[in-house]
Amino acid sequence: MITGTTFWIATAIKVFAIVFGLVNLGAILLWVERRQSALIQDRMGPNRASIKLFGKEFRVAGLLHSAADGVKMLWKEDFVPPGADKLLYQLAPVISLVPPLCLFAVIPFGPSIYPDNLRRVFGSEGWNAAASYIPLHISMADSGILVVFAMASSGVLGAALAGSSSDNKFSLLGGIRAASQMVSYEVTMGLSLVGSFMVFQTVRLEQMVQWQVDHVWGIFVQPLAFILFFTAAVAETKRVPFDAPEGESEIVAGYFTEYQPMKMGMFALGELVEVMTSSALITTIFLGGWQFPFLKLDGFHLEMFGIAKPIVLSHLAVVIISAITFVVKVGLLVLLQMQIRWTLPRFRYDQIMKLGWRILLPASLINILLTGIVLLFVNAR
Amino acid sequence: MQLVPTLIQALTAVDTAGSLSLRYQYGPIFAMLGFALVVAGAVFSLATFLGPKNPTPEKLIPYESGSPTTGAKHVRLSVKFYLTALLFVVFDIEAVFLYPWAALYQSLGWQGFVEMFVFLAALSIALIYCWKKGALEWET
Image 1 (tube, rainbow over the protein chains, first blue to last red):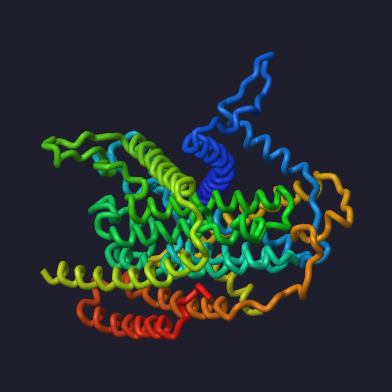
Image 2: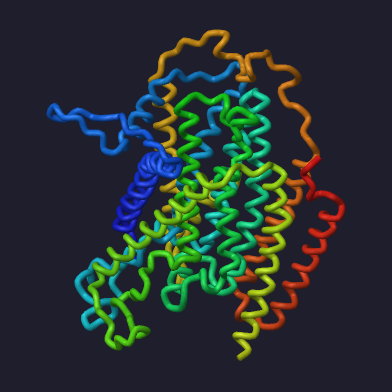
């Protein structure tokens, strides 16, 4: 690995790209969500915001509505309710936006780059394996997935603090619902991944992807865990059908009732970033991460289809294809989550809690047991 | 108060054989945390300072259907929520206990299987007990 100043420059570039990318993608997702819901409900959707360039009006399919919304929200009146706890009330939107952004630090979005070997084929003659490489994930922490869970747990604080500090009974109810729902599904999130760790023999996400590149995708060895984790991740984002904490027909807007536009927008942005990070996590653990099917580090391997000779690709091409693959996989999962949001009605609060504790939790315990037995017999053979 | 110097020492230590120094492991996470805080803080302060300031008494009352708010600031909550919090602590700590075992499972063999599933069985009994006692009921 590269060290010293180069490492920190590379880290700065990666951090900047990821945080900026996530925040801006959040705005684009807002547009995607509006257009998709319009498609599903057979209406036009927002398409009026326009920009005048050289005397011509450009509408860009309604994409400018997100920008217009951002500008409008920033210039709205902003005040702290007199009964609210000043510090906690103002801290809550920051706490709900920062952890989902930081969660991305341990997720790999591409294979390591070897700057000296860009034009060579991986492992070929003239390949300098000792050369310094740049890993395409931000942190190399040994704790890996623990960082993810630490960040995901801090997300609960944002909603809970917002609810309890606003001096509004609706907010309080929403905050408490949010806290109990999120901690319930975190148990399932944590336990459903244990089976995957048993198979991958690691808790580091980049090594999990490497295992999947060498063997098969995680969804094929842990299909039950995939369903459990996906459900828990959707519940963790507090969106429909799991949006009891902000159910507008019961408790106005839940924990962010008392917030003015931009601070409410920070909660909404945090939610959209959570959708993206949870999709990235599912991609990394169950869908092979950045791997394009049949693409190994030195090119395509199509022995399965009777083509004995691998189609070799240069290192740079493999890195670019892999990074694009990662983005496409995450994007498809995000679209799936949005499809779920616009398809299902809201579950009742007791249904949500029962699903978490009575179905998902026992199922994830059974998944651990089954994985343990199967691995024992596979290894004994 | 020993925490801060220890943390600084750990983050500035040189590489030891076999493992990256903590500086390279966790430095980037702190960098990301810092930058995310800067972005969130920028949005937050822009929203605070850009808008007009014209608070009226009607604006400032809590949004509760127009009627004045009643009762104490913090109402008493149903005991169900405390039970949920307790259950969460029990099962989430169990999950953290399982991680190192899970990562090493394939090299532990039969011994690892038996030891951990005794632990899991104890917790399953705890779950069944909570269920039977009615801690997993939310209708009432």
